[in-house]
Structure formats: C-alpha cells, structure tokens
Length: 167
Image (cartoon, rainbow, N blue to C red):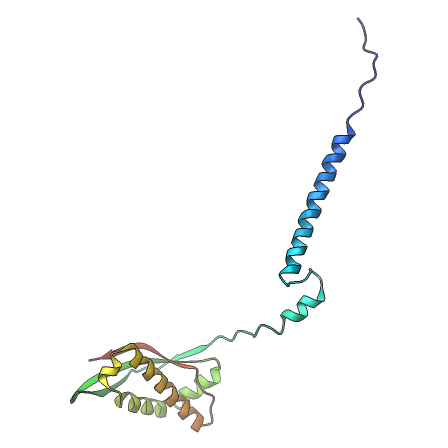
C-alpha cells in the first residue's frame, strides 16, 4: 500500500481572522450608532455630567391631588319661568394640599350654607346646559375659596360634580 507521505495542508487561519475582524467592526458600529443617537437627542453620552445637570431643574415634581366628598347632597329650589324647580347636587372638592381639604371639612357648615345660596340663585334653564353647569362649578369654587380665605385657610383647586339632578 502506498502511504501518503505528503504533509497535511495547513489550516486556513485567514478565514478565522476575517470572521473575528467582521464581528469587531459590527460591534463597534453598533456602539458608535448608539452613542451618536444619544448625543444628537441631547441626552449626552452615558457618564457625562453635562446632561444630568441640565435635565434635573427642567421637570417639576408631580403632586397628586386629594379629594373629599360632601356626604349629603345640596338640595334647593331654583326658579324656572315663574315655577319652582328642584336641584340636587352631589359634590367633591379637589386640592393638591391635604390641609386645604381638612380646613374645608372643619368649616363645612358655613361652606354648605354658602353653596346652597349660590345654587338657589341659579336659573333652571342655565343648569340644563353644559356651559351653565361649568359656570356653576366656577361660582361654587369661588364661593368655597372665599369662605376658606376669610377663615385664613389654603384654597382648593376644583369643585367636581358627582351627580347633578334638576327637575
């Protein structure tokens, strides 16, 4: 038998080097792309102190509102073309400061009295329109804030209708 005495062919190291070089180039391209995108969007490069200093004073802190419900509805009569009609309104008060709601709770008898007077002075036809209800909400807010201001307390943000019935 004839033996193959020829030396084995050396392994092709050129292909392995080519594959490693391509992987390194692709990883570098991705890294540069991410860094460039961050830089163009104004975020700065990661670890750079400039972007962190600029972003912190720009955003104000979020303050969640608190609410209280008036337990009993406001019920009163309203005028409608010479006839008496009834209005029943369930209200909630909104404020970012819980101290304002605590003050409103403390002065609730005075606030309810003033709110019933404002509601009683309303016109029936106006209360049937969305614009009239919006105007009434603004009047009720002004009334509540006026009472709280007279008592030296912080003001509330909004008066919300939970239920609104006129008949």
